[in-house]
Length: 206
Image 1 (cartoon, rainbow, N blue to C red):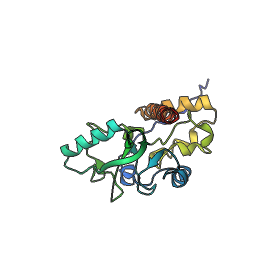
Image 2: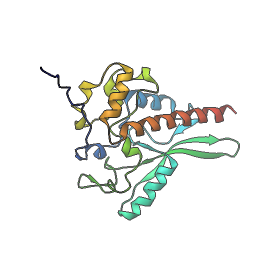
Image 3: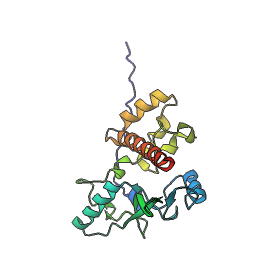
Image 4: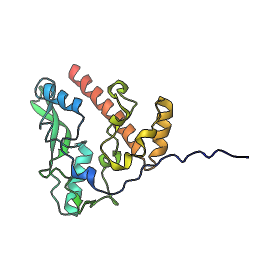
């Protein structure tokens, strides 16, 4: 009697190559880049403060403050600057919505010898999302390919071909394939982004 052996589900494991941290400038999807160029410089209440080519990953206020604290511990300049703002016409002041890490070299300021200098202690929340760019719960129609959910990562080569087409099966697969919690982090991040965008719209319409 033969018992069929189910193949082991693939698991994501960072190979610590440092590639994702070496190229943090301009890593946004092309459709987002075009939207920013067309609408984000004065055509909307939310104003982009740097070009799409210069921007890196967006940081919430609390995340930016943590980076600014950590920079002193490892003796680097994190280069934290405002990324997006909304103008409050009643007070004539700008409200900073998100920040970013300005990098001349294109690499994360905390990268040392191709390794994260804060990885095993306080690694930033935004970094814990990788390799996810987005998850399939929000704006599902915007993803033509399953690979659009992810940034470039060599460790994804054995996972991408096995992602199911069925939505329910896909969610279970992703949850199981990322035991490091990056999938759940990405889900939480997308929910926060959606809430923040809705809040901004509500404030503008008041």
